[in-house]
Amino acid sequence: MRPFEPLKPLEEAPRQQAANLPIMSVGEVTALVKGALKAAPRLRDVWVEGEVGQVSISAAGHCYFTLKDERAQIKCVIFRDDRLMMPFEARTGLRLVAQGSIDVFDAQGVYQLYVRTLQPSGFGDLALRFEALKAKLQAEGLFETSRKRKLPAYPQTIGVVTSLSGAVLHDVRRVLARRWPMARVIVSACQVQGAGAAPTIVAALRRVGRWTDGETGRATDVVILARGGGSLEDLWPFNDEAVVRAVAAHPCPIVVGVGHETDVTLAEFAADVRAATPSVAAELVVPARIDEQARLDGYAGRLRATTARALAERRAALNNEKRALEANHPQAQLAAERERVGVLLDRAARVVARRLEIDRTALNRTSELMPALLATEIGAARADLGRTSAALSALSPYATLERGYSIVRGPDGAVLRDAASVEGGDQISVRLQRGEIGARVESVRDSGR
Amino acid sequence: MNTPDQLATRQPDADRQRIAALPFDKALTEFRQVVEKLEAGNLPLEDSIALFEQGVLLQRRCEKMLSEAELRFQRLVEQAGGKVRALDLTVNGVDDAG
Image (tube, rainbow over all chains, first blue to last red; front, side, top):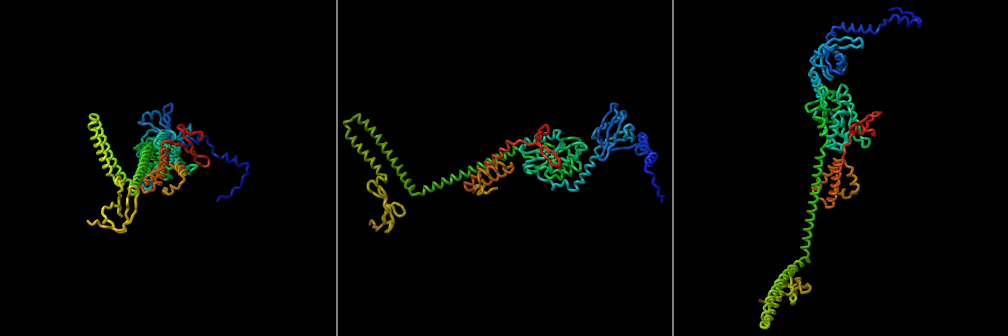
């Protein structure tokens, strides 16, 4: 152990320390870093794979861009002559492998990759990541069919998570306004492209999941997550693990429509319903007004038909009852009989009257021709006709009654023709020209025939 | 769903008001039930008529919503404290009035 050194006076200490420190200039440090980098053999010739970020071409024709992955980024330079020799150019979003050396750009104090060749990394790597994440989430059961919720048939409030700029929001709005205008649409905005998009999608989903109506306390009934078409890289945020998990965990049913028909993202696997495009997503979440109108018309037709039928049946039943009642009424029976008799009388009277008229006409004509000669004969004929008429009238039962006859009916109401058909004590009725007599049979005498 | 007895004793005005506030799906479901109940028959005449009148009200409610509705389009904004509010959204952007 070293012996403990005695303390120096305080005021001397800073000066002495500063004199001992190796203070360097900026250039010296930069040169040191540069030398260290150059001394590292692995940095002399590197192959770096990453996604191209910002790209700019200087007036001199050099290309400057960044190459990045999830954790870091490197500034890259392609000098004009190298650039013009290359088979393809660095474009933002492109994933590629750059080959070159690492060096320090003194003037800006940055290290850079001086690119000599560019290779496309191809879609192989993205596909591998896609499959790896898919397998992982599948193993967790995130894509299980049993997890899928049914969409509400008549949603009142629909959440839409997409970018505020672009055609998607417009398309979704147009479809919803046409098909189901009684809905309320709540848009939760997010970015749908670029490296920072995924966290904004997650945040937008959370926001719309948290929202409830101030008055009713109702949340959204269904949510649409949508994005228009683009390259595989453009759609990549929808393969982001956090986004996929947020879709799977969303509190209400969710429809995901990303890209075109052929594009498939993991967010769609996690959705309750996958839509081929954003417009299809909008169509799927609401019923069609025209279908509902047809359904309504159908019910309305049935309502009127069944009510009309019920009323008609009741009316018919009522009429039947009324008829049955009238038919059984004693007065009705009498009236019916009277009517029958009346018809007969009428017919008879008409026949007689016509007869008389014809004869009279004939007689009048004759009397004009030979008045004096046949006067007595005419008078006789007239009397004869009068008798015929009276005889016809006498056919009426009333006429019979008028003449003092009466009709006797037995206990069963049948007209009596034979004394043997009743017994002593039987109740009988006697119909006179006016009124009726109720009577009881005292005794019965046979005619003795 | 109401029994015919309840319908018969219900205040017509109260029922009218209740129906006028029904969301589309509820009104449509009630309408269908009314029709099915009528079609099943075996109802006293007064109940049939009460049901018919209720059916007409339900039909009108649905028709009105189908023909008069206008899509409400809003945007969520987060406020201080994390509260989320919906503001009306025009084609060009958020309305100032919200």
